[in-house]
Every structure is written in structure tokens, then in C-alpha cells.
Length: 359
Ligand SMILES: [Zn+2]
Image (cartoon, rainbow, N blue to C red; front, side, top):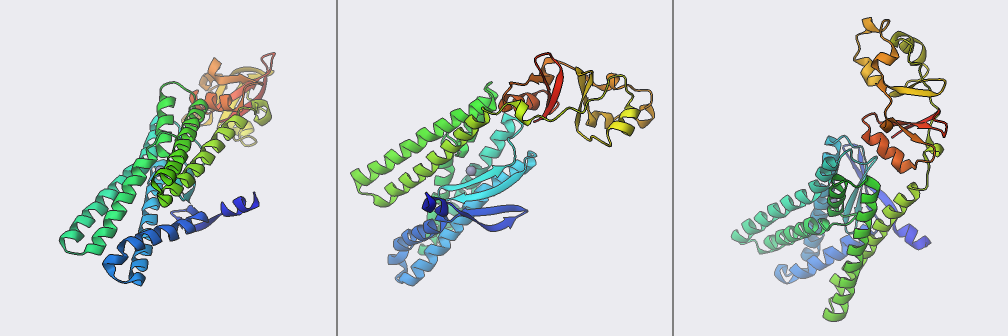
């Protein structure tokens, strides 16, 4: 276990526009293996093993950069969609871009997911054109390397479109399931299962390649990638299942409520300085009347603060605004996400306000 733990350690390669780019230690082994394979392929043309190795290593580094561009495209689109990018991790099978939160909508999820394969496809076209140009100029070795990079990027684009987590196609599938009415948690678990099936198929395919075609390199490659995928898919399923055990009462905050007959002036003068929350429950004697959104108060003319009561500008309470103590964290998050407020109140069995949860 300790060895596995040490092997999966990540180190920070660089920061790109504030985003840490980490690589798995196993990437180094992959770098050497791919370099060796490419060098072996071009050695007969170059006539020199040293030149072939140098070119193989360079081409592999360019491929590595291609994977990074794929991941960075996810990160760039995610930022445009308002998501915070935690890190980019380069895995032996490509990469993963991790976000601080889930996208707000299936549409955002789809755009972020498709950005990577689209970038890889464009890179494949560019390298393909470069290969054709080099061929026309009689530069055989360069043409061969460019063609290898074109095929590599095309494979990355195609492979990532398989519909299972953690592949991009899995995120596209999740966006589709989400859009067609499933909640995000169910959609994530289903996508994870699909990812495990794809991983299992890949492992079986790899074993078949080794046995039936004696293709040790491609076969083992498929098995290793399959194991990584299976592991990643399994961990998202476990994460979702453990989140479903947590209740909103374990994570809610005590409510700092305001009474409906208070004026906005009183709120701004007396309550907000102590309690600056974007959403404030409106309640008297723990009886919930509505929700007040700080953003909506900001739009009010300050001259009207004295004459406007909290009850005049609050959102009157509806069923989407509250949950009970037994609600799971996942359901509470979903409710806060979809009710247009970004938070839910928590009521006890007597219907009294006992907590606030912000999604
Ligand atoms: Zn991707």
C-alpha cells in the first residue's frame, strides 16, 4: 500500500495563470517509454541512435504539452463559466482538471467537457498539416514525428470521448443525464459506473492483445490505463455515496434572522455589521416568513431605507426555501442550487427555523 501511495504522489510542474499543474510521478516512466518507442521507430531513418533518442524525447515532450493544452482548454472554459479551477493533474492516460465546485448547469458542464477533446482535435489537424508540409519538403523524419503527434492527439480526442467518468465523454453524459431530469448526484454515480465498465472493457482488451496478438506494449498500456480509470471512477462513486450519508443538520449554521417589520435602515445599521451573509432568513419567534437577499437590498435606493420594511422586499417563503433536519447534504445542496437563492432554511419537526444551509 505504501509503495502504491508513494507512486501516486504528485509534484508541481509549474503554475499557469495561477493554476498549479501537477504531474503524477508515473508520468516520468511514461515519458521514457514513449520516447523509447518513437526513437525505435525513427532510428532506421536517422541512422543514429543518439539523434533518434533526442528526437523521440522532444516529440514526447511536445505530446506532453499537447495534453497540457487539452487540460488548459477545460480550465479556460471553466473559468469563463465562473468555476474556480483547483489544479490540473497530468495522469499517464492524459489529464484531469479539478474544480472547486460543480458547474451550475448542464450547459456549462457540457462546454467545459467538450473544450478538451476539441483542442486535441485541432492539434491533430495542425500536426497533420505539418506532417504533410514536411513530407512535401522531403523532410522524412520530421514528417514522421509530426504524423505521430497528429495520431497521438487524435487518439486523445477520441479516447476521451468515451462516455464514462473520469473521461470527458463521461462529463458530456453526465450533462445529458442532468439535463434530462436526473439530479447531479445520481447522474454522477451512473457516469462513474459507466466509467468502470469502460475501464473493465479496456483491461480485458489489453489482456486479449497480449495473449492473442503478443502485443505486449499496447496490451499492457491498455491494462494500466484501465486500472487508473477504474480507480478514478470508483473513487467518485464512493465520494458520492459517503456524501449521501451526511445530513443537513450536521453542516447547517445557526440562523441569524431578521423580523419582517424591521426597516431596511435598521437592518443595515444594526444587523448587517454583525452578520454579513448573502441570504438572511426573515422570521419572528422562529416562524419563517421569507428570505432576504443582500444583493437585492443593494439595488434599493438608500433614501427608501427608512420607509421600506423587510417584509416589502423579502422573497415570501415557498416550499423550495426550506428543508427538514433529516435532509441529506446532497439534497440540500441541490435545493439551494435550484431555488434561485443559493441557500435553504432548515426547519425542525414543529416547523420552527433552526438553521441555514448555504449551497
Ligand atoms: Zn479532457
